[in-house]
Length: 387
Image (cartoon, rainbow, N blue to C red; front, side, top):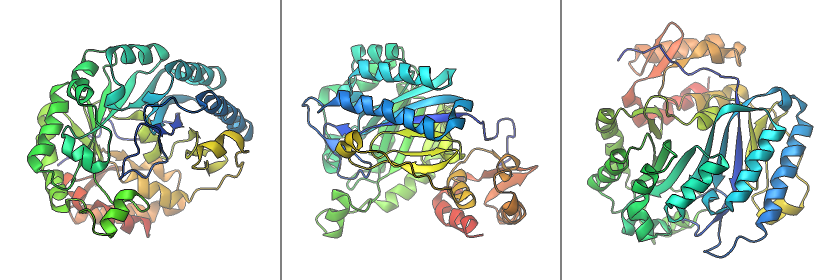
């Protein structure tokens, strides 16, 4: 493998905005994000939540005056299930952001959606609100796998979701899939992936099922009520993916993410490349010039209590290594050494050693993991972090 140095990852200097919407129809048993199952009932006091978003935006700008010098080129509505929100409130918040922050004209504006919310009218409405990219939380097309995950399933919407998206004006869509669910075969996983690709998917996030501490799934595994993830199948899938996806021109650019050229998640790259991002909402985290901050994982507290103005300075070296080296694209290291000049020589030497051992390519300041390294990537990243 030789590095294609034509388009390496660099720090762009553009910032992002993340808005956390906590409500779902049903809280999935494996999920450790802050979210609340609310069934199909109306969202309680949603107007107050959106007003609070605006108040927080004003507060963060006030505490970080240099935010007015930053330019933002992504907005990401995550959750929870933000496709459950009143679309007029989403549109109003996007307008508010554009009026108060410098937003690039051609920004990527993403909304996470669940299949049960997706219809032609819905997609038309969110496009009019300003959304130009969606991430669809499919996870699996097999009802028995969704039941195992404790996930809400609408058979009609699931069956038609890809065709509905394909025929909408939002052409930039990603699908989330989970692999390693107990009972799930390699054939099933491959069928799920190919179904997305044949519908024109330009981006797939493929997540290995994991046991996250504090979730209902972790407690059931610990109590031997339910089996843990199929780890052998997860390893086999990781080996299969490069050859499976390359005929569709999808390439791995991060541990769990694959895209066609030009369709990687611009927003998520900000987390992996230490760009600033404004995080808004209950359970959200942010990284601004004053430092990192986090909000309470409680929507009622978020609505009424004063938000902490505390910011902590990041451990730049450790955080950079733990995030940047998740990427499988070529990386322009000189661009990142500017953040950690005191570690440049040590890190550079270790990357050269890794190249000599056959783990990566590293030449002319451009670094890239070899695809097979994904099988033991965590241990290699921890080696780098311990320097």
